[in-house]
Image 1 (cartoon, helix red, strand yellow):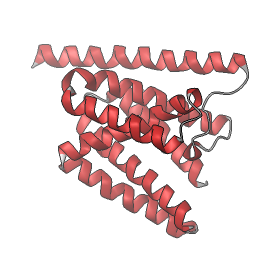
Image 2: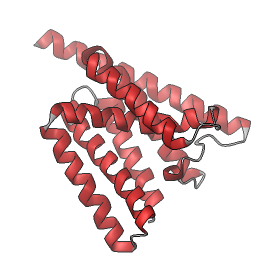
Image 3: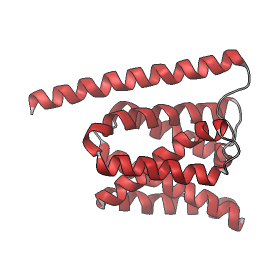
Length: 194
């Protein structure tokens, strides 16, 4: 399994947790987001410095685990990393719509916007943002595997076939609806029992 496929699988796993259990396990989701951001940074470092094979994989996991630990124990740092994770997950859909802007700029802007929203308006946005980010990340990861896209290179996640575009968007909508329903239901039960 190459680095793009590894990232796609990690995206799907992280997306499932975020979509359906984001509010309940938010501190652990922060750790997962920290791991994902660290792994993405390491992937870019590996490409930039041409780090080979096993050493590259060790770098990915090492930096990922470092960021996961920092995100878990330093809550505000974790909030910022979570915003970066969301921004990265949402940025492919922005890149497709505004191809004139370099993808790194889109990633940075998306990351800063979501980090600010979570930092300032944390409680009302946790459920919504974990669901949106998780569903988007699941769809991006699945699209990368199904269509053999390299999502580390910011290729568009939507296929060119109109029927497949509709299926992809419907899948995203269903994931969002299921995630919101599950998290709002659990949140309501937690508030009435607490």
